Image (tube, rainbow, N blue to C red; front, side, top):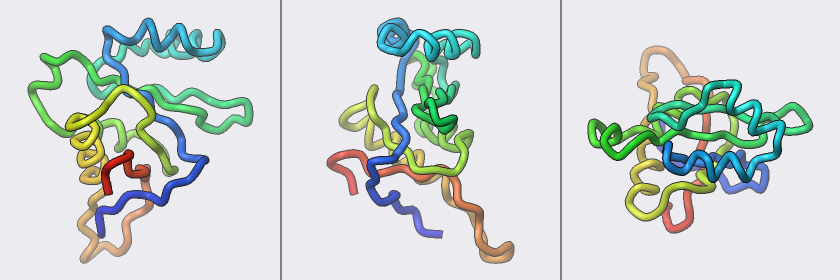
Length: 137
C-alpha cells in the first residue's frame, strides 16, 4: 500500500491542531453552538484527543485535534497518527496549529498511520486521507 497524500480538494475537512494553552482562543472563534458542543464533549486539547464538529448539512465541518503539552509530546513522535486513526473515511487538511518541522512530522505520522500490510488479506479499506500541507509533497 503506497503512502501518498490525497489530491487537493476544496472540500477537504479542516483539522485545527490545538494545545491546551491555545484552546480558549480557538473556542472564542467558534460559533456558539459549536463551542457548546466542544465543551460538552469534554475536549481539553490533551494529546491525541479529538472532536468532530458537524456542519449545517450534518457532515463534518471541521476537526479539533488535541496536541497536548510540550512535555506530553516529548514522549513520542507520531501523535497526529493517533488522530488520523480515529477519523472516519474522508479527505482532511491540517488548517492551523502547526508549521515547519512540526507540520512535516504531523503529515508523516498521518501517512504512516494509513499503512496496512495487505499481502495476505487483500486491500485495506480507505481511511482518513490527508492533503499535503503547503511545501510538502
